[in-house]
Figure 1 (tube, one colour):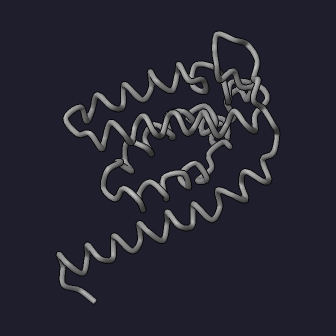
Figure 2 (cartoon, rainbow, N blue to C red; figure 1 turned 45 degrees about the vertical axis):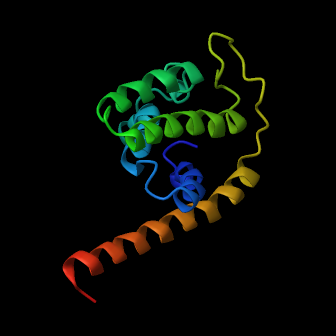
Length: 150
């Protein structure tokens, strides 16, 4: 799922049932960092073979990258939760659809690859829409409360 907003769909139920407990910003930063190679490939044509390398797309890498992002908000529990939730769910989703991934690095194969990008995307699209609607609604409510507009 390179550079896809579908990763953000997994945040919708969390934001619904635990509002304000997980940082959307740290979640987003971790996901963008993990897909940095894909972004470089699609924007600048950098080597495609490294799109899902174990340096960014393994549980070990997710913990390291999430820890780095978490350090920037070390006094905020929601920032830390967002960072780790973003990293772990990113690898969990991608390992299902990308055979070249090594999610359990240093094990050099992907034992959970199912290759069902279509069905997984069909589940994530409604969650992504739910996430977008929830954030737009929250933003509208904030504007109404603080700026007395509308």
